[in-house]
Length: 45
Image (tube, rainbow, N blue to C red; front, side):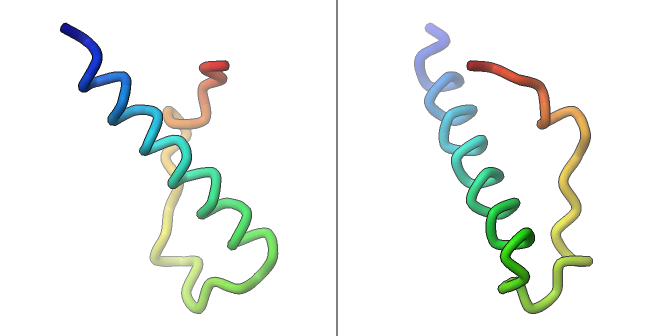
């Protein structure tokens, strides 16, 4: 039942991690347009 939800969360976390890596590398043209909500930083390993 929760498989689609888990898949979506996993994809979202992968996307956010790539986003943070880009911001750290300084390759994002406008980092101000990409706010990362604090609630998505929960460790779900």
